[in-house]
Each structure stands twice: as structure tokens, then as C-alpha cells.
Image (tube, rainbow, N blue to C red; front, side, top):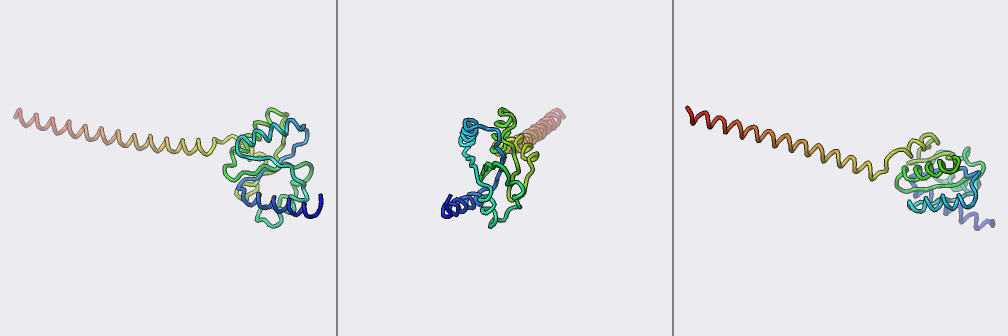
Length: 174
């Protein structure tokens, strides 16, 4: 690779990483071309991409960014997953694919909102519901609470109306 191309790739990587809120570095050792292609397709279906990066270029790209030092994780084959939105989706795709492919690729490290995340934490993140499901649960909980309050108020007004009616009957009979 010529110097100009290395500089272009480094600048491109820097821009992509800077725009991403979630970064997962993986070791794809043991995966053949067909498996990596399948993995990329699954990620692409979720609006994500998988990129194999040269460790030296990745180190250069990370130099100018306000991120944890990842140089200890940049050894051996390195694949990069970037997500600008939700950290759960790429973690879930990664975990499901690894489960079906003899635990490959292996997560080296994650960075979520500029905080380093261990492979174990990435695995726990993969088990979380997606952002949309969580928002739906919150909305459902709020709706149920409002419905409960409305039901309680309705019962209170009904009881007051019954009480007024009974007082009226008692006054009529007296």
C-alpha cells in the first residue's frame, strides 16, 4: 500500500470512528471467506458494516481521537464493527453469529460512548432488548399507569354518585 493510500485509509477510519458511538474490535481467526461474507451480510441487514483493518493504520486513526488506548487490543487479525446508534444490535448480531460459528469472531474490546467495554460486557449488552423494545416497554408502563389512575378516579366518582343517591333516598323516606 502506498503512502497516499495509507493516509487516505487512516483519514477515512478516523472519520468513521469519530462518527460512531459504538466500536467493537474482533478477532476473526478461524473464519473462512464464506463465513465472513455471511457475517457482513447479517450486519448489513441491520445497517452496520464489518471492516478488516490493518492494526498500524487503526493505531494511527485512533491517535487523534479522544478514545481509550486500544493499542493493546490491536494485535493479530482485527475486524471493526461501527454503529452510530444502538450498541445492542451489533452486539446481538455478533453473539448470534459466534454461537453458530464455533465462537468466532471473538470480541477483543468494545468502546461505547467513548468508554472501554470488556468482551464479557459486550456479551451482556447483546442480551438486552433493543432500544425500540425498551421504549415500547416504557410507553406500555406509562399507559398502564395512566389507565390505572383513570380507573381509580372513575371508581371514586361512581362511589360519590352512589353515596349522593343513597343520601337522597334517605332524605325522601324521612
